[in-house]
Length: 252
Image (cartoon, rainbow, N blue to C red; front, side, top):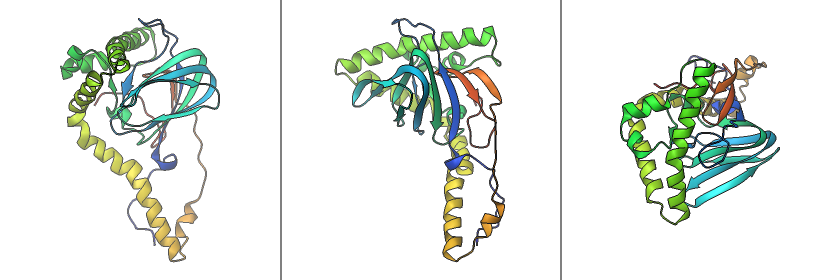
């Protein structure tokens, strides 16, 4: 029998995060149009390309890669991988994010220059955006992107030259920056992805006893984006107000 604890909200499968992105077409210092390089510390992220073309640049212990993106492409990268979405022409991507809600709660660190990363208050100020989707938010998102690219290019250059020291130091600095947020992340994980997995285990136990009681709650849900054209890390972002789906970015 499934336990009598309060029912979960109805998240997307596995309590994943979901959003749609149109990659930024702003040109950066190296002549490339695209998003803000960053990494996640506990979340794997996936891109499903639905339109256009472009690439994702990644930095990892294996070195630097540029992976082409075209309709039908599926690309994913694990925690610690620095990634930068590159616009090649009308690029449109559906993003699936492990542990929905954690990136918005701070599991995402931009590749700002070391002097910004060294000061938590300076980092928070550089990472924050004004609310809304107006010109002030666009200007701040572009400044944030440019600052992330400024710190990213030396990391990439060193890694291409065979020196992973700056990249490793960035990972360590990112871990220090988010350390105080981990208790809140743990609660989100317990209430989201972990709870969804545990509920499956309870349902399997019930079925092993030939008890299908949980199937009495079967139904369907639907949702539409509740914000279109917001400013995400990589591009203009459509968001859903669905439990477990991607919520607006904010610093906590």
